[in-house]
Length: 256
Image (tube, rainbow, N blue to C red; front, side):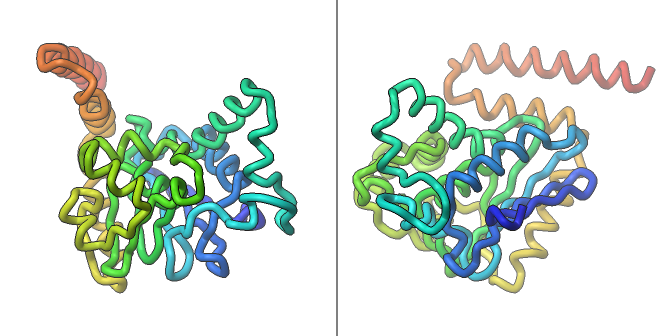
């Protein structure tokens, strides 16, 4: 799918997504979001880790600016013209865009964003859609949508608040300021900051570590953690008991 600006590959338990428009710092288009959604839907069941990265010096500069208004040479509908669509049609369209990001949170997989250079707007939200973020010292995050009169609508607001809290998330979004790699690590946006020449090796080491435990244990643990913020302590204890009961039954079945 390189003609759409994104490459996909699957090698056993590891899938890779590479944004491949380096000439525009991997700026994104709705066609890329549709391709991402299709790949997530068709992901083979044996895949346990998904690595998302960008070709060249940037992760993603966000939405391709040529798509914001007026005619463009990309053959895609300008973003502002979508506002003229009927409400139900617009809702369905944005929902489909969101599908390109939300599958990365599925309990069956652990997703890793390998971020270097710019991660702006949709690029920031794609990194946030992943469970883990490994970044280089030149990584820079910015939620640029409010500066354009828009809102972040690709699923980035919930993980951002979960990672850094409401007040800091509000400040970062409404000012559209840059968050440099060091601050991202301090805030919890980045799990680790590594030199650019160590990025691939670090992601591989992390991938190998994630593939070591039994897949069922990872799946159930991720599901527990994803739901923890929305449950009371008592409800979380109950969810842990239910998850452990399922694991024990699955282990017994595997031994039998």
